[in-house]
Structures are given as structure tokens and as C-alpha cells.
Amino acid sequence: MRVLQAKPSHLTEPKWVQYSLITAVVLFLLLVLIIPLISIFSEALSRGWDLYVEALSDPDAVAAIKLTLLTVAIVVPLNAVIGIAMAWLLTRYDFRGKQLFTTLLDLPFAVSPVVAGLMFVLLFGAHSVFGSWLESHGVQIIFAVPGIVLATLFVTFPFIAREIMPLMQSQGDQEEQAALILGASGWKMFWKITLPNIKWALLYGIMLTNARAMGEFGAVSVVSGHIRGLTNTIPLQVEILYNEYNFVGAFAMASLLAVLALITLVLQHVFSYLQHRKYDLGLAREEESIESVVPFEKYHNESTVQSFHVGMREVRA
Image: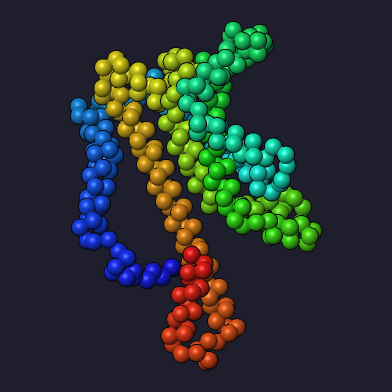
């Protein structure tokens, strides 16, 4: 655990500044996040639990839930594979055009999801050469599940790669090179060395991808066609119900989406806690091993030993 030293009083802000900033942040979170979240559940349950359950058990709502979960189940594993491959390529190899690949990786962050949906319509629509050829062979992309999966995949694929790349760059490839020199195969090196080193960043990226895939609206709205019971995900179903003045149904679906997002957030914090706990345990074992080799207590006074521990924690933190 990192030891924090108190700052001198002349380097800290006055108490009134600290309290003002805390108050401003708390008020902002209340107005923008907490109160709207509470109002969603309040409105969803405003007419009783029975109507809430009935709204969620409606056939169109069930179809939207199933389609959302199906899309997530397809997109997240694909993004994990693509993200690891992109991170490996951009951190382990130097080649001409590497900067261009890195820039293209951030393209979904810069392009509006609606524009992304229109790109897929132009590419796979019935009036495009490629789309008409696919439809002539019985494959429909736009206004079908494959189009929803492609649109969601496009807007979410940078998350995992962007989480893994900084970690892989900071770790370097010394352990991987050592494993190869000792005779390990490429796959064995990946499963035994690379994957354990990036697993926490990978899990964090998966959580972000999962949250974005469940809540994606713009790109999916363009390519889905809003066909009830077939191509409506949960966000699209919420829009339809709200436009039809079915507020209980709309807020019931919205509350379900909020619950899924909160579960994702809790899992994200659990993984973060486990990561920091493992790091602290590893640091403690390393300090114990160093002390067993160099018994500082025999040669230095108590203040020197304490300074050593603080220095070790500051370097590792």
C-alpha cells in the first residue's frame, strides 16, 4: 500500500476552497446522475409491481431483451479477440503505416454512431452492389441481426485495445522473449505469459465494451429498421414505447438497462479491487524477500529502515 505524506500547509488549498469543490461535485452528481437514475425507477414502479413485471414480460420487450443479450454475446468475444490482436500488433511490431493504424483505431470515437450506421447502409443496403449481391444469395445484413452486430462491433472495438495497449507498452516484451528463448511455443508463451499479464486490463475493457454494446442507440437505430419483435434492442424499444406514451413500459425497459449497467459497474470495481489487492500482496512479498537477503535492522536504525520501506512503496506505486 502506498504511503502518502502530508503536504505542507502552504501547498494546500484553503478549507473553504476544498469544501466548495466537494459541494459543487456532489450537487453536479445529484442533478445529472443520481436524481435522474432514481426517477427512472420511480416512474417505472409508479403504477405498481404487477404492471412493471407485465411491461417487462411483453413479447416485444422479451424479444428486445433477447436481441440485446445476443448482440452482446457475439460482440464482446469478437472484440476481445480483435482488441488483443490489435494491441499485440501495435505494441510488439514496428512497420510502415503503424501510426495510421493507431489513428484508425480511434475512428469510432470520432465518428458519430449515426454516421457509422449510414456507412453500413451504403455498403450493405439493398441498393448497393455488395448488398444486392448478398441478398441474391439469401444473406441480409441491413434491417437484420447481422447489421446490428456489425454496427455495435464498429462502435465498441477500440475499448479493449485501448485498455491493453498502455499496459503492454509499459511491461515490455522481456518475459515473452525469455519464454521463447527457453523453448516455449508462441501459443504457450501467450497463455502463460502475455494473457496473465494483461488479464485485468482485458477484463476492464470487456466491461466497458459490454456496457457500450448494451446501450448503443445511434448506429443500431439506422441499421435495424425498428421492426417490432425482430430488430429492436432495449434502447430502441424504450424509444418506441416512449413515443407511444407508454411511459410505464418505457421506464421499465430503461430501468432494466440501468440495472445491467450498474451490474457492469459493480463488476468493474470488483476487478479493480482484486487487481490492487494482488499488486499490494506482490509488493509485500517482494519487500519481505529483500529484507530476508539484506537484514537492514542489523545495520541501520529504525528511521533508516522506515525510509527504505517508504521509498520502496513510492517507487512501486
